[in-house]
Image 1 (cartoon, rainbow, N blue to C red):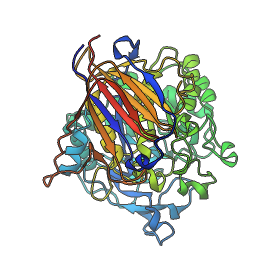
Image 2 (tube, one colour):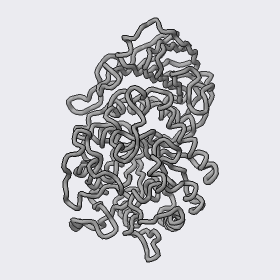
Image 3 (spheres, helix red, strand yellow):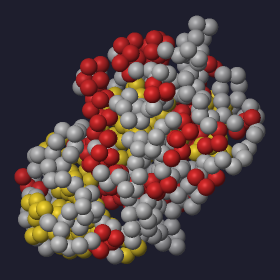
Image 4 (spheres, helix red, strand yellow):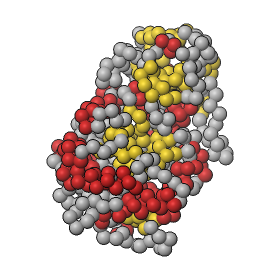
Length: 526
């Protein structure tokens, strides 16, 4: 047995609750935890939307929704059928910003996904001449060489591996309406010439909503099948080492898409039947519900601060994974599962997505899906809208960033079973207490335990050895400020990360107050 480290995440608000609550005691012994499998070393990743790279209209801040928007035609494109007042023009993100790079690098190695709905209809201006002021016919936005070079340089600087998708709009189609590599070939050739590479790609973003995503009118599952066959034939020769992801659908498991929108959805079953084999990893997207912005699109809000810690909400990620895992088993047996886009809620997230309360969902999703065998997750986004890890204007870390940083430093690739009696749905054996364990990152034989008390009862965990304890606290659950072991977390004056120092914790009982969120790290010989 080696020394033990423990990371806790709590809300100081909960310490005011009555101490007479019945304690639920759970004995944990890392040395006896069974190995479940492994995850990709870049398991925890993030998205940078293509519209951030090119500039364009992305989700407007809540306080500015409904205000007049720029009416320049080059800035007017939004997903088909969506209310334009939900969007606001944003200039291209500066991926060379030292602060942004420093914070992103701290999460590496990571998959950096540059995709999203806007990527489906983006034209690559493969020239050093000035880009056209308006996109060519069949496209809605323009990506320049310098912007894509910025993506490649950023990915390299932050120890990332690039994930993307390609255009599928009318501008890439032949006389028969079938996809051609006219844009993909330019992207791949320039990427290689610039010294970069694309690790993985979906043919295009969210084909389940093809019409909304820029595909031609009348796009069907049969069209998708023909497109994918053309795509796969091209990629097999042009980029044989690139991981082909697919289909990358979203919302089919229920709970996200309103009835009025389901009529226009393409089913993954139909697309996979039509396309045949060819994917190297089965990808899907997940949002547990719509944010407040989604109301105008007919998506009712699915979560509030009062329900954000409920088992119903926290287990939704498992519900969708089970739905898509069944499709994987039928159409791509043995292929790994990737969750290539996810966040608090669709349409940019709720206002409280940037606060401490969403860190419960964030880390629970990482722990739960690793246990279920998902190999990689890309959170939406790094630095855009309410669900971002960083504030989009200042790049100030939000609570989920600190959670992501601690996961990165502590949770390794080997997944252990900390709660073997948990239900297949993810409901823990002890109500409200979610337990996950991995071998400690870069320290074989040592164990990291994640424990989340999302319930209303006090719990006690008994440990057989001493630990180093990390406790994240906040004044309240919907605060954007967190402290580590009582010290507020903030960057230094030079935008460096602070030292993350643990608190020694003796063997024995550790109390988890109601609504506490704990990541317990226990080096333990195996």
